Image (cartoon, rainbow, N blue to C red; front, side, top):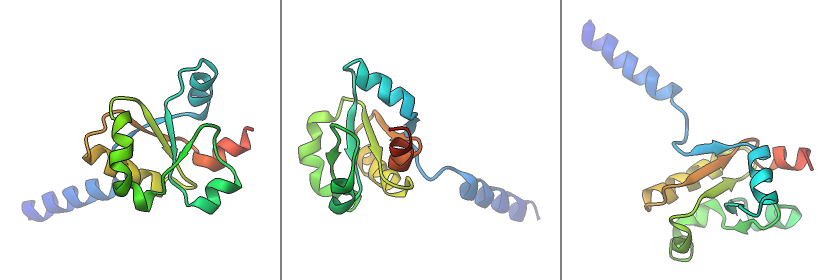
Length: 121
């Protein structure tokens, strides 16, 4: 019975754990950094049509599903802070995992993602 309880506890903790390991940054924090000319590298992980419809100024477009194909291009930013965003956070989270697995240490997710950003503009 103890083994069953322990197994159930492990399963529940896995299910309630966050979907991503990366830290987050608020929209206000990002805006302040941008206004102070201390903006992190901002990566829009949405698809091209979404990016072209509107994006955060200065954002680089690297679709989440192609993140692993762009690691060579992105390695120049390995030691810099990187902020990822999409629409809901799922693609940004997946992209953050790819970057973290490739050795990027300062990966953050934008709270509210692009919908949150566009609301305050």
